[in-house]
Length: 140
Image (cartoon, rainbow, N blue to C red; front, top):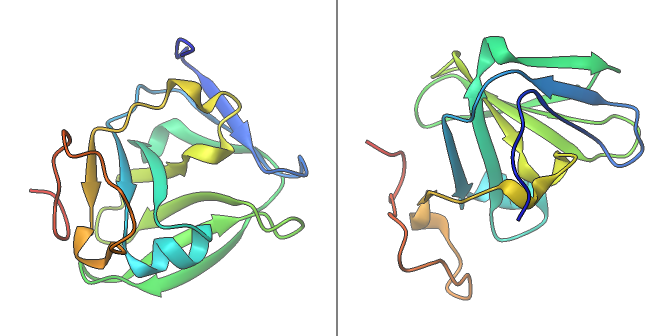
């Protein structure tokens, strides 16, 4: 496992989108909601949650697609318009945070999952870590 340094960086697979975060993560999680499954192409999406003011796109302009959120408003998922790689998610219901897609990190090895959310949508074949907290929908 690598050591996380601040700031940390990432981007898409083709290199058109680059970002940086200048803050320590607030949380690291797997979201099992159907929208995250569909947008990731897998059983969940892994995210590093950071304060919105600490996240900055430094190269390129991602395309954003919004889906209705049970918490209110939309969840706006940013992805590269050239290669389609997911970059981040911004919930209207909590505009002070950004969820950075873990696979987009330059060094994703330091990701340490802390909990699972939206387990009510998890597939029966999705093997979650039984030692971590689970939330049927949103934490708290």
